[in-house]
Image 1 (cartoon, rainbow, N blue to C red):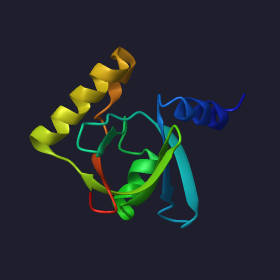
Image 2 (cartoon, rainbow, N blue to C red; image 1 turned 90 degrees about the vertical axis):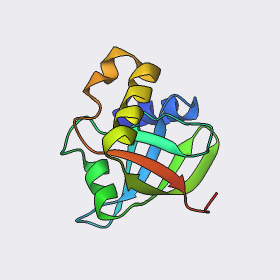
Image 3 (spheres, helix red, strand yellow; image 1 turned 180 degrees about the horizontal axis):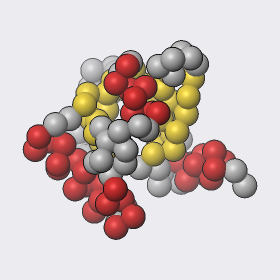
Length: 118
């Protein structure tokens, strides 16, 4: 089983999200399986474990993305977080995924807002 098929399976179960971005250099579609936290407001919180994670660098270059979780796929706009909002997002992700997620926050942290304006 490949890493991408494992990510797709976990996304199908709702454990992770499949994040589709546009490559900042190639402009081609790029997909990554990432951890997420979903507050009650319909937005998503995501965090990179490094400054060099491609999906995060892609979002910094172009905030438009698509996310698939389970049977749901929707368009989102990424907003990079800082300060207290950033810290709260990282805390929520660590609490959801446990200690392996403690590396989160070493890179960019984003709030993904539904592109339909909800």
